[in-house]
Image (cartoon, rainbow, N blue to C red; front, side):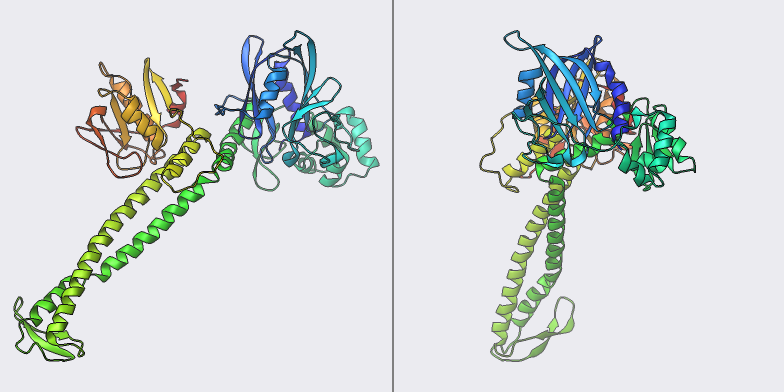
Length: 549
């Protein structure tokens, strides 16, 4: 839980940024900013998120994707504070507000001072830039008269949220005990109502035993032991110290804990917001085509009497009185030498009934051809969307946007009128081993570009056998070592639907032995002269490989 107490503990970790210089400012998604800061001869990445669900501030070692055209607020920050130094970092009271005091020189060499204020308050989170007089230059989120009755607009004067709660760090242990007695604090809610920055995580932990008045001081001054925990609601949570909760995992720093806790969920939320939830759309398409396939197979079963219609039409022509009108007739089936009963429509002659059976035969024959054609197309659609389903599961934001573009190009989705066409080459994920590059295509656009345009004819191509997966290319034509082949196969298995399996079969062959499957959407290929290698996907090994940026 990112409460005020937690933020005060995080401040101790962020103090390493003091005197550091802001080198770069980038954005990730609509609400997150990443500052590259050079401090004490080392580069750090500081993430500040104003997300409603994942608001936080910490150092990060994760790789984030940045848009080619940043939003106006990011550009404004670059204009005003890029190259500035961090003079000081502090919190406001024990609230969830972090202030970066910045100083530097503008383009005219005039000295300037700014405050970058991060309000980490759930759905009310914001990032605000003010001058030294607290006049707002701009904010990530504008609000006329919003929460706490404040105006967050350019040129307004920034004011901190007004709170009557007490800062627990301002009091000694004895003073806190006296306050607890004076205000009759007999429940966790009593503590959260009186003190600033107190979440139910710490308030509930205080009441584990009867000495809650003494526990309070001890708990807010506990040693920092970053841990993911099972909280009092029996849900996975985190805190700077376990506080007698069940520990799921311990970490060496608060930042590493938050990186681990938030990264994937935050990434999935960004992909969802950027792509209108492609995953749900793809799953709906799979279900739609599976239902269609079942209907087509039922229709095919209904044409099983095809040969019977032909036989009836043929046998009726052998009868002598073709002008008779009957309800049925028994004839000899000269193929089996058995007597069979043929139903007739007595409105028509035997000859006319024969012609009607021949027409039914021809109609069923045509239907079978059409149905089989539709079954093949529908199975290809299911295969295509199953591939997309796998690809979206390993996507970052840019990968997902490429999948969205592909669906627009294939007329599954409609493009907005104001959207701009992008002609950028797909960005491939690339590993390096023994100075040899290994490229990975994580969606159809990347796979096509990698396999049919970027890779050379004598380079090795890898793909998991008979399952959705990425195209992987080992960019080496001679003196290829077994270790390099196994590593490329390991990557292909890891970036496949068998990533959690063992002894995964991976096919590999030369690029020149591949041929794109015509008239089928996706990046499907046929291959010749392939070999198969069996590997065990291992995330730790993949993570240990050097990624070429």
